[in-house]
Length: 377
Picture 1 (spheres, rainbow, N blue to C red):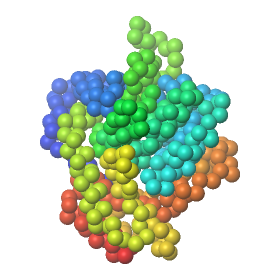
Picture 2: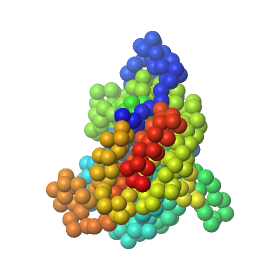
Picture 3: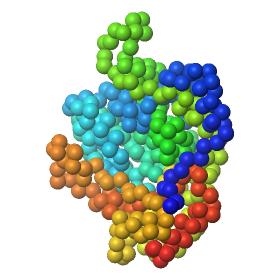
Picture 4: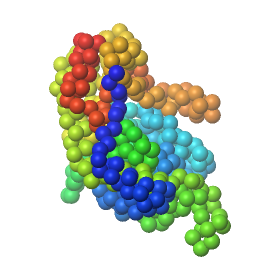
């Protein structure tokens, strides 16, 4: 079975992890944590990085740092992972959804302005499957209404967005560089993996200090076991950070490999009738975190059946996100009643992604292409 993801770890990862074991710095202190935080923040064009235990906890800490609370609203895409809404509802704030753009599968930014109310406090753009959200309209809207941007870049390590189009100084900026607070995941299937792990980026020193306190149980520096606020034990270990440092050293090659895998898929599948392949808008440089496809209704079967047939061919797949508006856990809380998001519903029903891990060789990609063509041609 060709796995949907397999990380590519090497000698340098092992060398730095072994250094942690050899020196005894295996917990939540050690030189690799600071090096990883600083290195990733600099790569994304940010001043501060705060490493945490995973991408979900990064969102939770960011939501707290943004000051979300009861009565506040946060606008985000319905087509995302549950962690995004979890972080919002845990503060007592209310998530407000928009549908997907049918081309990029990211949030439809044209729908956001209509969802702004006097209670709106933040917008949470989520870069989907390695392709950036069209950020300029959101940045403009946030500026006009005094809203915070809490950016989820968990799936967009190294992706870039051409910002300021039409202005005097347009420039390419990396995802993770747009929010008052931006978050990443370093799960095993991400471009950089620490097994589990995450990070919050910000340019605000006060927000960075707040995030560091929240991830570490809100210990008071001058009296460790005195607590004025409740925090979390969301620390990353030095061992995990060592893996991140090793991969950051070779990160340009990682991005290049992901783009090469996507290009090979595109070449092998572009002539399949009724199959939507990932796009890359002119203002985006995608990293194709996962190479997803969406089937036209003409096929007569959905993504579940396609996945079953591909599994019989020895190819593992994964379904697309099920929209947050369709989640029973949120319907049970009285959220999203009667709301409809047809684009998200369609791609959830008809979309899935193919093996996309960094360990894929060209010959294995070709085997996947052949299997997809047998199933869908």
